[in-house]
Length: 264
Image (tube, rainbow, N blue to C red; front, side):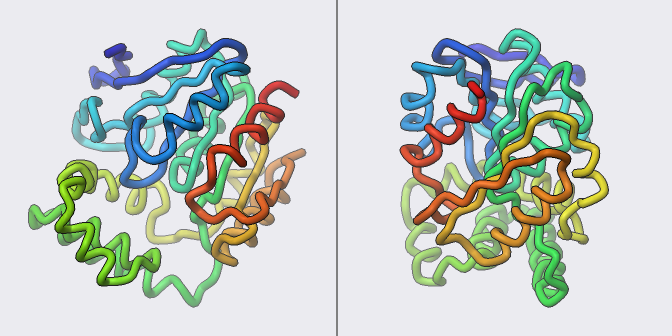
């Protein structure tokens, strides 16, 4: 298992496959470098691109040195970019898109050549702020009480997963894997998105690399609005709606869009 060591000593596990310009995949909440449709996405990209997937700190085979800070995660991204040769496109999904945006701002075009974002879950609607604050409070309380499974269940309920489906998942063998990464919900939500989940328009305006902002045509309506706001805020950014897609975007739809963007 290849690893890179972040400046604070944390070992970050990664995989590197394919040939061509490098792209680093930055995962969203509750996922690792090998979860979901990652294998299919890599297989579709690797004929054209060098694909680096990694376990964000606190997940999978990576370490988790405390105390946490978003800046430490940006250093992790930089370390993985180093394994790519020193420069790469960042592709972030969901809250991973928020981290990719912060990394592009912090590292600049010397290390981040391009930025691709899919459904960053910022939300400017004031009507959802109370529910977000309640979720954050309850999720953090569950983690502090040593109940990571409850924290994961709260997140799933917040994004609309039916209660009976959550209960079924809690009885499945894979739930142990979800509990193992659940503490990182605090990183994605309390730290990256924070109590103010609004689109960081002023910060986004500082991105100075070619950027592609994407959302699914069948996704939550606020995701389309957020994508539009980001595209307008980031100088020269492109906006793509992936028809028929939701938050869990199909690798077969996503891969050609990413390849075209990176190789352009």
